Image (cartoon, rainbow, N blue to C red):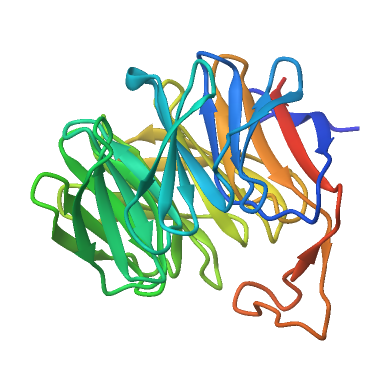
Length: 334
């Protein structure tokens, strides 16, 4: 049997832990290295805290029903859930205890923490807005109207700006967190439906996962928005993560059920490092550099023809999931 030779090591499934519960919904994953905790936005089940060392659920954050994501701010020992009803539940990372409930709008999808201004930015696709909340006081600082109703992933640049993907407009925005204004809007073509996004601060490169008919990772120059290059990835991308230590880019692609890893050889040079199969619908991810692991989640689903199917994503995109099928997947580097 031939031995893989190009990649230094291949990621392989290390564990698959199924969590009990009713038919699941989920979105983003966030990892707290200090406590070995994986935070999972499980929507109706709230924010689930999974200990990657013991492979057990250690908590569900109280008051986080409807959460799509947990934004982690280790410098404050704080986490903030992104609840679908336009609220955030603040909690401590060390104790996992809820502190307060913050309202900033009527809906919410995702968000990021901007470290220079100390603000949380929440995306509100249904409302066509983003909201800025002071992380210390919990006060709403501003709401910025958007042209998009599919505002997707975002990432700060550590200089007071945030980059935001607008899936329905095929653009990436630069927003100044000080003035709460859009300062640039850059088309992502030939990347269509930009969804996953992360930022390489050292090389000033925006890394965008796109759900095009031909799905790609697009690399943009953060100084002027110019397209640097594109590389093929799998269909159904929702998550892109950049590891500055290894200069690797990880993309989770749920329709094709693969994890694609890309090497950054330089600011303008990239190549496929490896691709491995995962499970259908494993579309978001978090990395654990200390253990050389990648965490994904998935569930068993199906298509009920009597209910609406989101055919814009895939012809048989699941419109329901089975109870007791939600699984945390850990992929280990060899």
